[in-house]
Amino acid sequence: MQTSPLNPTIWRTCRALANAMRLQILARIIAEGPLTVKMVMHACALSEPRASQHLRMLQSRGLLSATRESRWVRYAASPDPLVPHAALLLQALENAYRQREPVDAQVLALTALTHPRRVQIVRALNARPMAVSMLIATCRISRPAIYRHLAKLERRGWVACDTGETYVLLRPEHDLARALMAIACSPR
Image 1 (cartoon, rainbow, N blue to C red):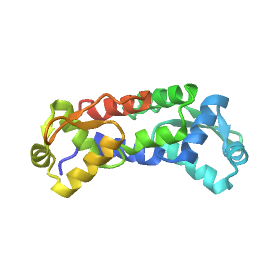
Image 2: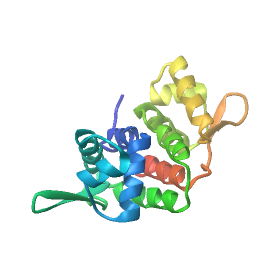
Image 3: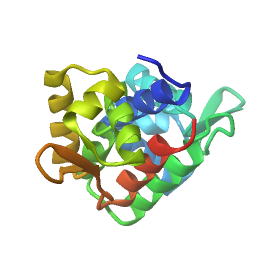
Image 4: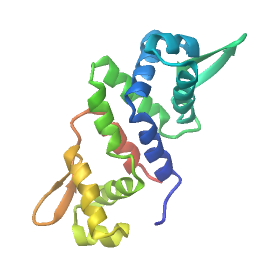
């Protein structure tokens, strides 16, 4: 499978974010401003190592910045300019929190792209609707695997079977899913 630098980045970012606790921590930082590991630990009833691990994971995906103040490190919701999709994704997550979108709905949207093959399928369908046989040839995915990935995307409202076995890319209902689709379909 030929991949671009964006493929692993977006699916790994979605995999890291498709976690209710990480989304809860990010929502708290967005709502309250920069927080330390201890503050997150107490607010979310986590152990210190667990809170630190979640914060580092969010930072590694370009969604948090860390600033040292004396012996404390404060984490703020701030997109890393070196991560191309971080600003768009963080804005979509902030909107989801402000609109009180349930965490379950956010996780559902994020899990649409937690596999590089689904990113590949979304990109292929963004170019044009395709029959399953064409998707198999374009993406080089086995028939059973393509049906598994298409079923997952269909359950999340990203694709639909148009006629026969032709699939089309849909416009997802929620802002977060639309932002993820825009990131997945952006030029390489």
